[in-house]
Image (cartoon, rainbow, N blue to C red):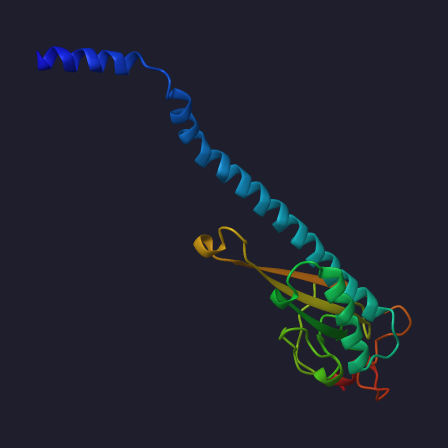
Length: 198
């Protein structure tokens, strides 16, 4: 008797389709959530990467337009950077302004030509010292010429899955040629770009 009742109940349960939509929905929800989170995080990452690229190039361009720059001038440029990166976190951004010159007789020898006193880095970016060697791509500068290199770093942290996946470190480099002189004067001493090679 009990077995027959159990068999009938199982048959009715097997034919009952009232909860099928709920079961299917339960299977689909995790996939939909993953797609929504992925779309949000990827869109955010692309937007931050674009702003990061623009900011790095912008700083190199602004520095290369000037004949002389002081520490206050560089700080003012960094204020513009904070506005350009908004609404994203600028605490994750680092920037370094690195003025590089080639030797008067040999363009393959390149070094940082200005002290870091008047070219502070942003948020602890690397700041090579004056006369440190700095390798540039072959043919980028000629003898006794210079370029402004801006190295940027960004610690990207996903908002939703960051605690699970962790962040990633991005880096960018922008190079700009000084517009008005052979080199931008950071030290206010009037020395030529190639002073490190004398």
